[in-house]
Amino acid sequence: EYDGKVNPSGTELDPREDPGIVLSCSRLEKAAECPFKYFLSNVLGVEKPREMGKDPAMWLDPMQKGCLLHKVFEDFTKHLRSTGWSLPAGERREAAFSLLRREAERYLDEIPPPNDMVYEGEYLQMKRDLEIFLSIEEQLGTRPVYEELRFGTGETSPVLIPLGDGRSINLRGIIDRVDKAGEREYHIWDYKTGSSRKYDERQYVKGGEILQHALYACAAETVLKAKGEDQDPKVTRAGYLLASEKGAEAGKGIIFARDPSRKDKWQKALNTLLELLSRGGFLIPQGASCIFCDYRVVCGDEETRDRAKIKKDSDDICSQLWRELKQYE
Image 1 (cartoon, helix red, strand yellow):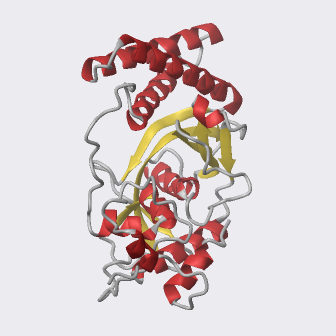
Image 2 (cartoon, helix red, strand yellow):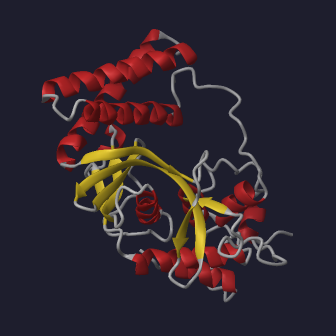
């Protein structure tokens, strides 16, 4: 009977020892949320069940809508740069909504909506999201020099992320936006068009569930230096731009910034997570909400899940590592 643990025969589960394992931030963050889900998806390669039908009251799903808005944001800042940042505020706004209209029409051709009313409702929502994005642009006070900065994807090489103990991992990703903030000083941002629920000013890594700002900051310095445009780039601000009405409605603000220099915090949390995974500790957290999990139908019944859950007072090394990980705020 599966009890949440796998006994590896060597280092095949340890990205610190196997350079062939290239990680992403989303993969790591999901492992910190539920190691068992990581095991199903990334170790066993189990694909999540496909939806059999589409909601008749929906045009675009959250991922499709996010991709559409990301493209609009990217094209908007590229357009401003091509004009030398000389457009007046009114013309900037007009350009942004023109880009939204163009991209929505492209999606309309590829993904027909169930009816005109659904389309108009979702398009109106995206216009409100774009207003929030334009508000963010005004508040940032910096200008992007790169959009969609890639590493480890396509023909680009992964970046080595040092872990503070002489070891490292290979990371791949796409940084939505890199802004120049001063001489050799940069800010990096990731657009978020969903809920802001996971972001908390009091938590820097949230038990390993929020690592992207730190890892992308480290990666950006390496990539910028490799491009030869700056021999000593420093990322002094990193975080998330909550560029949607849904992200802003919680009242947390629309710019969620972090100091990327706190290596002592994120390196310890990341090493703890990697140690857990390398030992085969693919447990289910106590209190995990399995009801909305994509893998609920393939991870067994309630009795099976209970066997794999991390026991509160267990002295098992994997349970200890999990509790240590969740102490990193």
